[in-house]
Length: 371
Image (cartoon, rainbow, N blue to C red; front, top):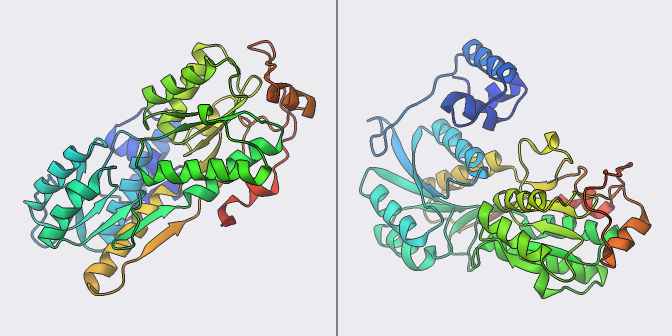
């Protein structure tokens, strides 16, 4: 039976687009939809539909909790589901809403059904609430996307610090000296590691970090918008911004649009997390792209390995990100332009974009290999 990845490859689109066509979760361009539907028919794709808590008798079920509101979750869940299907399992999904107590209740509910194992994108408070429940029940589990210290669990995530460092160092390399960061929810490993990359980029370039330019965006669209507004209201606003996830990026761009501030003319923007539509917006967004589908599949492989050999050592796996270099970083601007912004002298808002050939720095081009 064909997989979503095979359908996406044949249709020339992403697995996210195939998912939207199948589930009607977002509008898809008519031509793309027709192409995907044709490939689905030609390859004979069939979806396995399972009601929560009701796995087929000959298949075991694996539970998963994740904050489903973030768009990166779609590809991550698709990777988990596809790899579980290969292993003869079905997925039962619950939304944690990034709330520790909601996560605990969801896991308790899943464990009350026929759940063989768990995949979790944990909340900041999972150690106190959810982990004891899993340990008490003796249920194998793996953490994905967000890691914990100590090495006592199987877990997998991307290389957050090197990717963040490469993006911020690139901004500094083209002349910015007031680079702001919109950070995620406190306590999450993704927030901690991406801020660490932000700070290490400054240290490598010999540029001081202004603590007032690090704002919490709460890992949400509205939080990102509010954080960006606070940045813009400063006497000396930043000349460039690094956003810590895609939801906060949407919020930040919304705030800039509301204030009629041009990207990258008035402010440069780089982001962790890429969007399917990033190349289509104007300007295109320079971003660190996570291989979410592969991340989900690899998490299941870790879990299957644990089920096959319960006594093997716990493992922490890191997956590199790729840097998608587009126009929002504004690195084609002249040196004088960059120095003017570094000195806090913004041009007239709404000026036309001055984009020339973008000179990718070695740090940006080799982000995935930076240790």
